[in-house]
Length: 185
Image 1: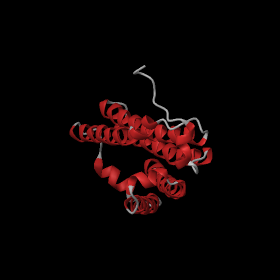
Image 2 (image 1 turned 120 degrees about the vertical axis):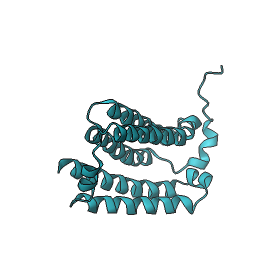
Image 3 (image 1 turned 30 degrees about the vertical axis):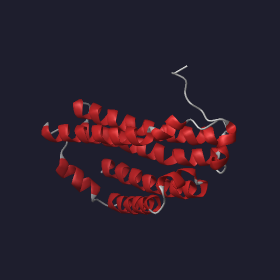
Image 4 (image 1 turned 120 degrees about the horizontal axis):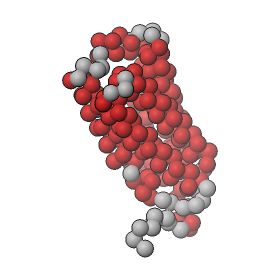
């Protein structure tokens, strides 16, 4: 049938040997932090109007991208198979989600539902700024790790994925704390 999800057979999983259930669970940590951060941002910046819903739709698309990547790794770890579509839709969902969230921020700017002066003040307040700096440093390390490796090699190297997910979990955790404290001030 044309509508079936393509799953590689188990012999083809040898190149993903180090992908375990544990790796999938560690990969879920930054997805959870990022999703919570976007929900807080949508609520804090946009209230309940159109801006909120547009930003939230973008946040949902981004969260689904991360969830699909986690599910892909989980299925590899469980030796179920390589459901390639779960890995391949990561970038389009992530990019599309960010684009929709950006459109929401633009709408919020034009409708004046987002007060950017207050946002800047909250972001540079203590302790938020410290967490944001640490989060951006973590994202820088993550970018370096990804740029110094070929995409296809990176996607199949469990050791590099472990390193990337710990760094990403740290970065997203710091960003979450920065956002959390910025919205509480």
